[in-house]
Amino acid sequence: MIAKKQLKLTPQPEEIKNVIGISCHENDYRISWALNNKIQLSLKRSDNHKLIEPKSGLEQEFALYSYFAEDHISYYLVSNSSEKGSLMDEFKNMDYLFIIIGELPPSKLNFLLQQIKQMEIISAAFLLNIEKMKSKNRLFFS
Image (cartoon, rainbow, N blue to C red):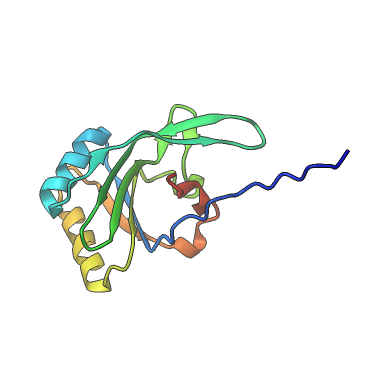
C-alpha cells in the first residue's frame, strides 16, 4: 500500500497596507453608516469574520463590513471584540479596526484619518503600526 501525502494549502492574506484603530461606543451598523456618509464609502454588512483558535478550539465571530472601490482598494470595518474575546489583543482599547488593502497615497490616508477623527461619534482614531502587530494574520478575511 502506498502512503498518501496530504498537502494543506493555506491562502496568503492580501498585503495589509493600513489599519486605523477606532474607539467608538456605537454599534457596528451605526459606525458603518457614519463612515459611509462622512467619507463616501459603501460599506456593507458581510458575513462575520470567524476565527477558531488552533490550540483551544475556541470559536470567535466579529462583525464585518466591506467595500471594494473601483480604484482596486478594499476597505473593511471589523469589530475588535466579541463575546469571547478580542480580535487583536494588542489593541484591546480599540473598538473597531478600519483596514485598507491596496495602494493608498499617504496624503489620502491622512485625509481619511482626519475625516474619521472629526466624526462626532468617534472618541479616538489612530493609525496603527502593522509591523508591531503580532497577530496580524487574524485579519485575513476569506
